[in-house]
Image (cartoon, rainbow, N blue to C red; front, side, top):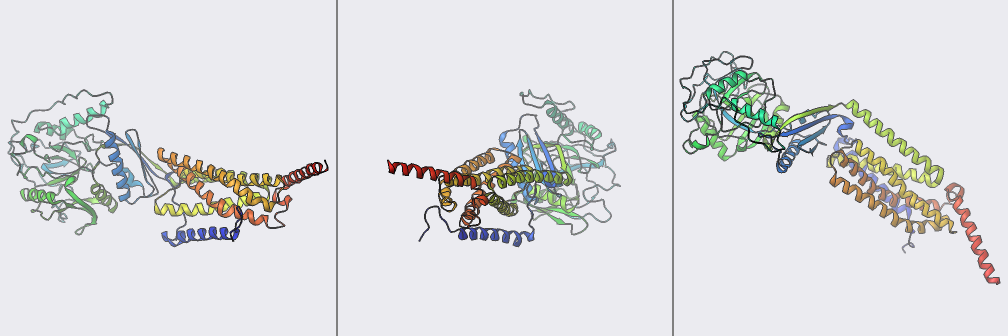
Length: 595
């Protein structure tokens, strides 16, 4: 037969709670290599915080769609790099990336635009610290230009360099420039002066727009004399305003990624007005970009030290690569990423099959980062790393210590108050809070493994606030219990009635707290989400503890003669008021009968 309303079988509920705890900690210790530590956020374990500022070629305000697309792609790159607990948040035109842990340095390259292109090398690269050879031609292939002379091979495209050659992606130091027999094209319009910047709206950054336009006017001019002057003026030690903003339909003067050599490169595509007439011209134009890549992977260099990035082209991309390499045997081709030369091998023979590789003295980490960046796509915007901050683990440990001290002080004050005011019931409050902490800790460990949840200072603040919410549920039950005793009931008979009447209040209060936490989680950004998540999780687990632990323990205490002693249970004052209430009620009843 079922017990009366409000009465329960305490052993059944306590056993259910024990089974939940056992199941949780079985998952904690039997999964995840037995580690029983939650993942900590950047402010607790240290890590890297990078702020990326979006910039456009004309300095205009980036669109909402482009910023959201860039954020989504960076989030995918974070997952591909295997870092967990990372967060990408929009802050106006900025993207703020936080990556916790010691292996978070890769975050600094996550904002790479990753616009890949293959450009034919014109003439011969020159050292970054030297002036260009005045006899060297910088003539880009234009309407009437012939193919520039080839330089002796420094390495082969898709192959390791010969042992006597230069390092991968670098020209041999003893290569001499050969003069070009091609005079400057008379049809090329001089562009030695920067084109006038179009009138910009109020949200344009004139400085950014001016830097990009001036760099394009010099380093992407169709006038060979201007290109030669650009090579002389180019400083490879400074930030490149053309990073991710170069025009694929024009030649380019740029540096390699190490800043050691300067290159003059042909356009990727023929001029738009000559597209039809040069439809089959692969001797000057590769027509290959990152959009032609289907996959990228980092692998050890089979013929040397270091690592390479192997690329697989899509069907049309493989056809373009085969045609381009067949038309440019013994010519150098530059693999250009965001306007920088990653590698510049010499094509030894036609390469068919739709695959090739990028070499450049990569470490495994660099090759993996580059492969993932290319595989997941180019960003729709260019970004400047306006801030890159590394948070030390020492600072994180100090923050964690401060948070734990704050939580400990708050918990101790709750304990003192409960023991002073409720006595035995206060001890049950303390026990319930401890058990609540036990299951919360297990949830933190498991959530860190399943969804990558990381605990930060804001999350600890959420738990500290939740201590008050959890204790409030106990106080609602105990105060209702005192009210029942004041009405003349015994401890044992008061428990079921107090539970029925307080249960609705507890559910309503926790529902309000959970809804507030859920709304805050949805509309908040950054670390405030961590606060809302832990607050909501603690609120739900509060109900589990109240229903499966606190109420059953109070019911058990009420059935014990020793524990139900008013002076021990903390109900002495309420019991005296109840006795007076009964005496007064009895006296009134006797007086009515006598009358």
